[in-house]
Image 1 (cartoon, rainbow, N blue to C red):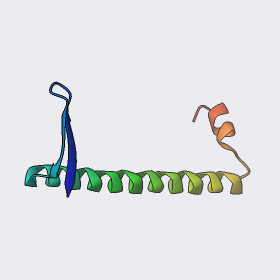
Image 2: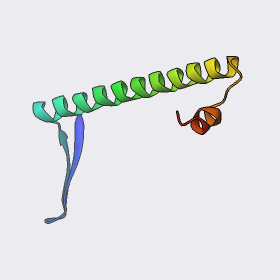
Image 3: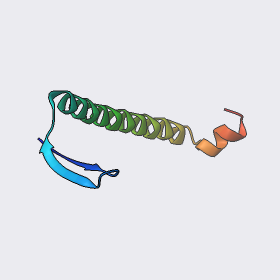
Length: 69
């Protein structure tokens, strides 16, 4: 995989192959992004499920806030 590197002190830019360490770091970052997206989706689904349960009881999130919950 290629990486673009620009040295601002010397104004030299190059396109080079990633080192093994850089590739591992990039892959770990990609894995983190996937994990974060999955966690966000899970939280959104849990929130929707909770709101549906409240709606079945005839309550809203504002009702819970008014009760201090």
